[in-house]
Image (cartoon, rainbow, N blue to C red):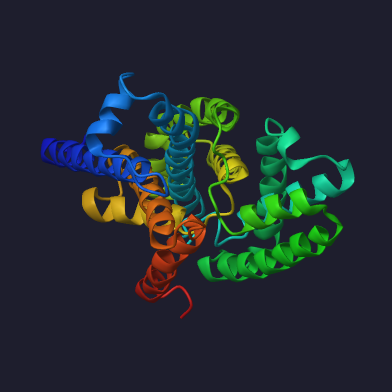
Length: 339
């Protein structure tokens, strides 16, 4: 039973976070090379704007904004699931190398299939998931030992090493790309939000509609898994099966997100930790907050990147890394994972 005061606190914080997210979205869609006043923005949003404003807002900026929101939310929720299932506070798709695995598999398919990168948008999430899941299996295999199991230190070290190897492999494969393919892959690896059309939203949305509600339904199971394995089994939880299913879905969720947004790290690390700091470790409480925090962080980072250096901008992945890397070091120190 969750205390009423915690529920009230969750609702208040969630409301504030949603308002901040909406403000960040408004800032993003009114900034850039073609600036738009707030009045024009709302006028255009409700269908009363000029043709040029409607075209820019609804056909170019709105799809990109939705992709940024969905990707940030998915990465944050994925990181939360990985941290809970593996009992590793440092687990995150980018840090563990899962994003790099997705990128390598996409690059490999481009080389083998000899296709134009823009022609297989609906296949990208599936390719990214295959690469992400295979990478996760390799990480868990090399991180596990009979004596200690999977420690946070071993997972991070194996993940970082594998990420470097896979990123190098992707760069090597790029030597076989044509100009358009190489430009696409470079944009993807830099973490630049490249999905700016409605087809990208359509390609990503079904995966989130299926996976996200299922993970929220497993909130109580995750609470039990985080207590004690023997206790969880005594309460009727199939520990091995549930851990594997949730983990695979978390990897699939992050892989689908990065397929259309680029290789973005640290969102899955910061979002869950910030949410837990505010409302505690109960999954029913912190998961909704983590989703909104992840969306806000990515929207804010993408907007800052676009505003700081116009017109080319700085990829959102770089801005997120500038924020997330110090936070990662702080968490490493606080958890004493390497001592």
